[in-house]
Length: 545
Image (cartoon, rainbow, N blue to C red; front, side):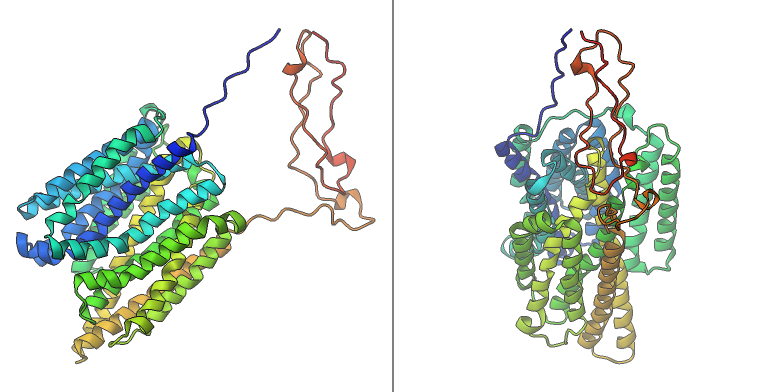
């Protein structure tokens, strides 16, 4: 009796379609990253035009950050359940529409609401973009190249955003930094439908934990709200301490619920992967140091060296070019040859050196000798981020790819918020102390930045330690090296050989194609005793058809 073979699942789309999909996701990521950094340059103009108070002005950035960081995990899981393409397109539409609202804002309330909605759209889009790429590029050098392009848009986009922010603000006004998103968003929406795979989601029943969604979203939002308040009120202020503590408690409650929930929002099986957990930990430490580096260097250039907005952006441009050269030029080849772990550990070394050099930054710095070497050493970020991205998505089931993408982006946002809050507070504390002792303002600012950069170098050193200790590959015992004369008990037992099924009970009338395949034992390592090899049953007695 013959049977028709089951149809194999469709493979990845063809290369041209995959290339277009990669371009769409990269353009969307670049738009989001640019928006996050381009706004900081235009803050003084926004304050003058709309009449923001100093405290209220910080929420032009914080409203976006709180919404973005708190919704990434939920958006990633909903992408797995409802369809990642659907989530990506909807998020892009929300972000583009809210950019129009921000560009037309005539008062503080409208702009802050638009910025919050931009954060919502960014979370919906960013949470699933990496998961889509992981499905399109399942393995090999092509996947490494795709992740390098994705990482470049995130790593270098912030520096490019500062350049564009300065140029647009000087040439037009602050409205232009939001309205520039409209043509990019429209192009992404037009190309996303034909380019992205239209895979169906698992359905809400596969993970519709409403209480879990409420706990993690409220917890992350409260924690981020408390963290961003530290810049204004300090770490011990109730306005920072209370929401941060409440948020932490809600996140803990979320994980306790996930251990018992019938359809968990975050299946805890994902956290059993050492590579995934370590990649997220290392990323949080690295982003905390380097995002604060970007912010504090810009403040040093403007507050100490008196650079204007456009010149500050241009001063940061070599860092973006160096990151682009390494991430797009060599990262894929190095990862394919040496592996993600080795590339990550190597890349962290020049990053530590870059922040260590900044601890010696003088008050009257020369750009070529004091700052340019730092910008070039930051090229290590272009190697570290693609390696981390690959590790963060390694060993993840296709049904959880959106969730893994959301988790990876969440730790990135938490790292940036914690890094800026902690390092800025340290710098401000040292500056205030020296100013109170009578030091000139430029010297006090520079000394404060020295403390922050030294702390950042320490965070990177911790990241290197974690990558070295926690990402070691397990050693496989060498059976061939057993010395002559050793007894059978001295030979390591081979445990990875596939089990041979028992075919002695195959019913009469079964065809040969129905008999389980006998595994190939020709690759048993030299030196293995016969007793360690699974017995191959006699299949000659299988009745004929």
